Amino acid sequence: MPKLISLCFLVLASAVLLLPSCATNANDSGFSKNPGPISANLIGALQDGEDPNTVPEVKRNFLKGCVTGASGSIPNLVAIQETGLLQVCGCSYERMVQFLIDQATSLADSSTSLSEIENSAFVSFKDLDDDFQKGSGEFSDKILRVFEQCIRDSAPTISS
Image (cartoon, rainbow, N blue to C red; front, top):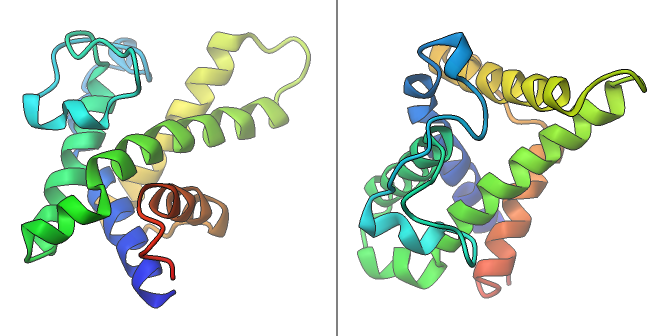
């Protein structure tokens, strides 16, 4: 279990390091803004059917930070391949975004639009990254569980 938690924290911490370049202009920020091509080495992190040429900038940055940060911290490339790092990073992004949207939805009232809910979730995502950039960030147990589940789903042998 300690190996799972340390890998989870490593993936999570690595993933948020490249988010600041996502939101240089407040009007251009959001989970679906600035679509473009993803690096060929990150295509394996995408969901089935997702077009690698139209990946939103925040997702491209998250996946790049997650994969390169974790791979730089794990000395053996074979270990990265065995853990299914691309799948873990892709899953973690999708589930973290969904978690933040669900959280924003639960705090919204009936007059709140879907756009406002997504914006609120994105602000939470960016605030989390800002806290880590300042060195004061901590992941809630709920967010850690999102990443732990992705690690378990991608590499069941790690958790045993």
